[in-house]
Each structure stands twice: as structure tokens, then as C-alpha cells.
Length: 299
Image (tube, rainbow, N blue to C red):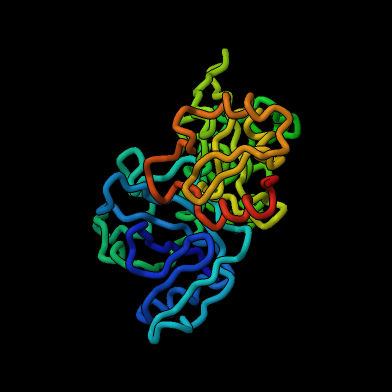
């Protein structure tokens, strides 16, 4: 097994869903097979406008032939392992290439950088993870009683050494994933409540919004930005209990079971629709919105 890098762009012609599968041609099969059962980092190429660089990690469960496309293969991502970085990592950091394995003996970037699928060293992977998890303290929710000062202090340094493999399980712990999920969701929504439209900052400089899962984790909802909403505490409470929901056009719906439906409607921003991120890839996926409508919203 080996760590790897998979190159992905949102406008890719390939049948990629980074949290579920990655499609690639047969020329990369031998490299992808080396990553089977191990962790990979996703990289958005520099040619993409406003590239995110290394933007997520996931564990490859298995490599299979694509049943619908001859000559193509799928890397199936293990459920619950995909994790967007709270701090996307640029191809270069402080002027230096993050992925040192791409440098040739003369210190120049080799042609290997063009490979859409490639293996990388444990040291390079650890470096990417360390930068991607970044400094999380500034986005911690106000009511994070279950996170101790020790955990807060230790999280940013988990991956600073090349000994990445014994520490990979940190990527699937709820403490790390919840902090990271909050950071990516608040960033996508500009720290503004998607239902009320309010952007409130407390005296400590932290946003008074929370990161809500549209499809909850306990019901197999992934920790990805397209399954998240930035909501005020009250809006979050109502959304989780089905007193407000979303239509397939992102209109904000108010349940008939709300005790004071007029007051709830008065909280909604004047467009009557969800205030969404500008990037289409960060907007709520229809499948998650439909799940909430079918399983949570009180009609």
C-alpha cells in the first residue's frame, strides 16, 4: 500500500464524485492499485481558476473496472473517510513545492507532476495533512465542551512528522472531522446564516453560526461542504427538528407544525430562499436536500 495523489477538477469530464469514487483510464491502473486500502490526497490543478490546490483526503477501499465504460476504472472511496481540508493547501507553500517527490535531482519540477494519479512518500503526505488541517481554534463553536484544551493544542501538530501512517486514524475521529466540517462550511457561506441571512460576530471575533449537516452523520451523511449549511443556533435547531426545510429550488419551507409559523417566517431572509455559496460545487446537493425533505421535514 502507498499514499497517493489524485488530480480532480470540478469541471472534469470524468465520472468523479470525490467522496464516493474517482474514475481514471487504464494507463494509471498500476499506480492506483498501489493506493488500494490506503489514503490519497485530492489535488485541483493550477490551471483551474482560483484553484484550491490539495483540498481533501480519503481512503481508497478498492479499485474496480468501470462497469459502464470499457477501459476505464473506478477507485471506490471508503465510506466515512472523505474529508475536505479546512485550509486547502497550495501546490507551493512559503515558496516551496509541498510535494517534494516531484522535484528532480536539479531541484526542478519533473514531468511526474502532470500525472493525474501518482504515489507519494509518507513525508509528503504528512506535510499535506498538517497544512490542510491547519489552525482550527479560530472556528471552534462556542459550545464545544467535549473538546479539551489538550486536544485543541495537539490537533495542528498531528501530522508535522513524516510518521504519517500510525496517525491516519486521526482523520476519522469526530473531534477532527467536526472542527474541519465547521471551518469549510462557515468559509463557504461567508459566516452568514443561510436561512436568516444574518452575519453576526461575537465579542471574541467568532461567527455566531453553526455548521449543520443536511443529512445527519448518524444517517450516513458525509462531512462534505455540499451536505452542510451555515445556520444560526435557532435556525439550526428548527432545521434539525423539521420545523423548516427546503424545496428542490431551495425555497425555505415552514412546517405546519411550527407553534408560531408567522414568527418563523419573519426570521427568513427576504428572498425566501436559501442564501448559498457562489461556487456550484459548494452548494447543497439535491440528494441531501431531498433526504431532509423526505425524512426530517414535518409536512
